[in-house]
Image (cartoon, rainbow, N blue to C red; front, side, top):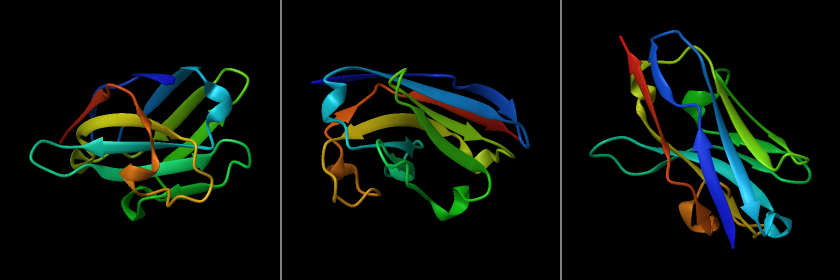
Length: 125
């Protein structure tokens, strides 16, 4: 089992920045990929970004390219999401996810077995 705990959410004005963190514990040796998803009220869960835990190749949702940066610190078992130039449409609960599957599509929720509780990000206009 892998446990994930997010932090770093909050209220920010449009154009501002936030850095989310996700601390992983437990069987971190089985992690192949980690990702961030978000879910706004009344909307489906949406892929935001993912990173290979070893090779560090990254993928982003189109709306996040150029504004979001995913990274990880393997020594600290921590995942990060730096979000710049935030927009009101970025308002959502952001969830950290981890999965053991090397070749699973990174943008699909089903590719991840472990999820955090989420951290709220609110961007005011």
